[in-house]
Amino acid sequence: MNEYVSSVISYVKEKYAHQPEFVQTVEEVLTSVSPVIDAHPEYVKADLLKRMVEPERFFRFRVVWTDDNNNVKVNIGYRCQFNGAIGPYKGGLRFKNNVNESIMKFLGFEQIFKNSLTGLPIGGAKGGSDFDPAGKSDAEIMRFCQSFMTALYRYIGPDIDVPAGDIGVGSREIGYLYGQYRRLKGVFENGVLTGKGLSYGGSLIRPEATGYGAVYYLQRVLEHENDTLEGKKIAVSGYGNVSWGIMKKAAQLGAKVTYMSGSAGYIHDEEGINTDEKLDFILKLRESNSKNLKSYADKFNCEFVPNAKFWGIKDVDIYMPAATQNEVDMAEAEKIVASGVKYYLEVSNMPTTNEAIAYLRSNGIIVAPSKAVNAGGVGVSALEMAQNSERLIWTAEEVEARLKRMMYDIYDKSVAAAKEYGLGYDLIAGANIAGFKKVAQAMLEQGLF
Image 1 (cartoon, rainbow, N blue to C red):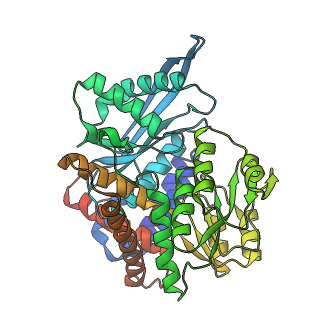
Image 2: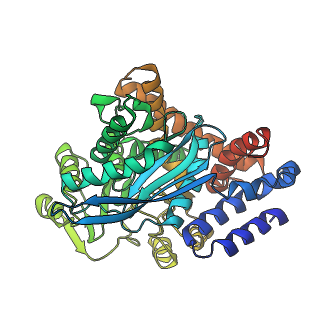
């Protein structure tokens, strides 16, 4: 490894030892780009990596709201505007009780390179709060969102920072956030948030976009192996928008999701989650904030395994973790290898520990990284921004055609970048290098910032 790269990794490990998620993603990215640093001594002279691992801005603020019993509640809000070298900051808001500075920074750092991979002019950011919408009434969620936006609105805008949704922030939350922004600013700047409803500037297929994009990326991986999606069985963790999009697109292209997990266990539907009735039921289950998939198993007469994870099952072809970070460690990786599966595509942000990824790859499993696989979501968010600026609404077919081209291009750029630096067929290093090069060059050309 390049000596400069090693020194920056050591710097991050020492300074941010209390932020393990951030340290993990920095180490993974910087290790991959070491060959690029070897080829560009000017990056070392400009201390580019040290600058890149520190956010340009990081806000922490209190969010005060009242519950339905008029009790005062206090949560912590965050916005990490990590890097704006190639465009306005762009990244989702996450409302979940485990949100902290480390998670915000790791997500923001990942977002820099993911957004760069899309080819669109958007920088990297992330934000959110330790507020959990689960179990809250609509009125409570509205009051929280209004308070959150009151603290944040001064620091965002169509040409400054454009938040979107993430875990715990769907179309309902985006609507409440935008309504408060409009009230405070007195203008209809619908380009300030993405993931909006169609009635006020949202884009068609945005809810499905991340899942659709993941399946399109999977298509290219399979093509490389002289394989196809036809007849493939897929195991997906989680059942939010992303997993739902995977289920829909996989079914359209001849594959099927047969395993789906939640926090209370997993279901096995041998017939596949591939009908309108089943997909609509998943939507209703998610919207009700239910954490128990047993109701799906009861309705469709399939197996439900409580308090368990499906890692290690042998009757699937592809694993697609799509729930949250660090859901697969060495113990799960060993089970996955023993299952004989060939393809492992990360869909959620950093679902796998670095040690587990290394083990999967050393045992011949093809691993694709989340920053490439799940880039379709932010890609369509940027397409929503484009539609807003032009006062247009593209058809679903137009948006999906652009999404498909984007995902194919991300795959191709990743493969080419790895080959350029003599790394062979390495989708992880290739994605990191391809995303990094554009941002690094922009930073260098803009001088010290």
